[in-house]
Image 1: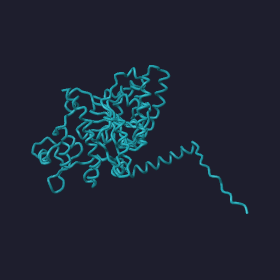
Image 2: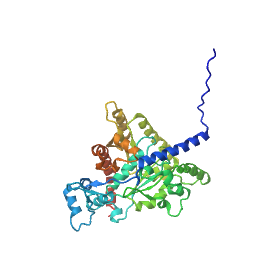
Image 3: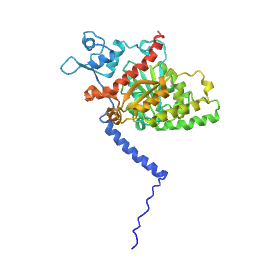
Length: 401
């Protein structure tokens, strides 16, 4: 009796099939986005209670309530909430209170003094390092201190653009990114023409698009025809005029040392590296510095005066369970980074995971969402970290008086 013969199974995948597969996935992701972001408007900022606004301002709740309700007050009154003396305020109203009533030193942008905003880079080679979420949280946290913030998405995956409420493939094209400026540094309007408002008051974005990959081919091609081409300084030139319009410009990069990432590294005044305390993440972070150093050696002489105001490594998604490897990796990180490692740590939390699924951050959630204690556990370290970053520049701004 002969054995049954079955047709051979092939796992070969031709390029044509990948194209069909990608098209299929486009439809699936579009459907998922509609589920995640419905109902429209897709993203909305949180509301703030009297107690939350008072906390942002560092004021007693009773004093803030008086300021909101007294006759003739120029401050926004909010709307009555519940049965007590609480009121609800919009994000824009909350920021107004911070700018007018808090003891937070107000930036030159608010006071009209002449000083430049600061460029902050959030970078890491390792995927899953919370780089993009950290970028968004720092941007939101600084805005809640009254700052005006611009985020620049330099990752072709455009995750930050999605966190800002934009559909990268449907609402953004390559002309809305940094790419036209990469092609032509003398373009009319410069990078300002690519800025879009977001759902979050005080936060604008230059979004990303998959076409950003083109920069990785264009820049080296220019090097072949123009040996003197300063390929590492294109973005710095484009961002310079925007320093007068924003307190902070925060750059989010792809998890690789691309030409755009290199431009971000050379444009930034300071750098943040979120690091998950896992062995592979730590090793990847070490590789980052070696690769950056090797490439920077090619133009070190021309950038001999380049100095970062600070470099800060912050542990993120820290698992505190008994079986976690975080304590061991933390000790490695302390030995490697010394005073670059901040004492602030962002704990692991299911809220962060659920927020990522909904294209949200812990700052997007209102107290009424019913998870305030869990949210606060993650939000508070981020608030403290934003305060630390901001205070690094307050002294400099104060000298501009």
